[in-house]
Length: 321
Image (cartoon, rainbow, N blue to C red; front, side):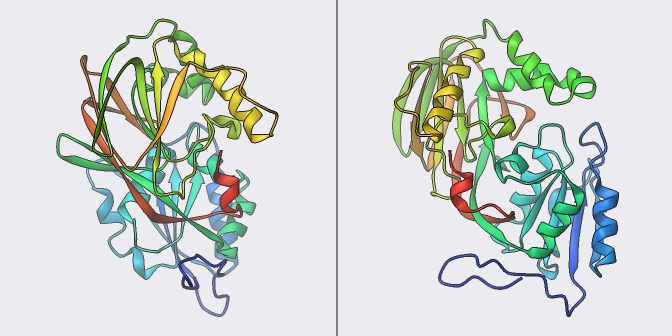
């Protein structure tokens, strides 16, 4: 890969005159269908790419799989959003481009990067080597730190993910929609926040700390989310139910298409932050990039500016909502 110049990531290409070394990290538990990974690997090997495969197991920390990552020209994380964010966090600031191979259920990170699902197109993206440098988040709970690329949340969104787990194998991404429809009367509480050192309090059903801002089908969660601006967009979900987010999706799409002022308001508040601490009167479940965790509030998060280079054909404006 070519080096960065003037603080920007140039397109860069894999050098066809040399044997290209790629690290492929596979989560065998991700997804419920054919991801096309065998075809992807075969196409790369036909092109002379040297692939080192490492399959994840629950008893080995991610750092062990990527400790020699700088000896590779690119890394591929084949799995769901949790796998991609774990690999990204373990390789942060290593300057090795990462391909978020969509082998999970929802693959929201890949969707935010506007990546195709076709293995031949993904192989071409890897070989062309165009990468965008973006931020990611670091979350801390009870002294333990993890990374996330998409968002971290406490409250209704984590409850929705918890309730979707038993449905994912049968219904795939539709499980999230079915679970959201069940959240007609979610628990609300008083949240205590510290945002860039300033205290704030509100009553609601959840808090989401977003880096990327698009849901399934690249629908914007809310407007003005930029994964390259060095800050989070914090979304405060007011009392109600999670289906009340639908009008906000409509407003975000209208804003994206320059269709005028918002038609709906009052369902949520948004603000910008580089650091945030979240606590709640009642302990709420937590999720980071679609992975439910046993821990509950409180948690803290901080932005890691420009921490990762993602391989994609998209340009930076394509990633903004």
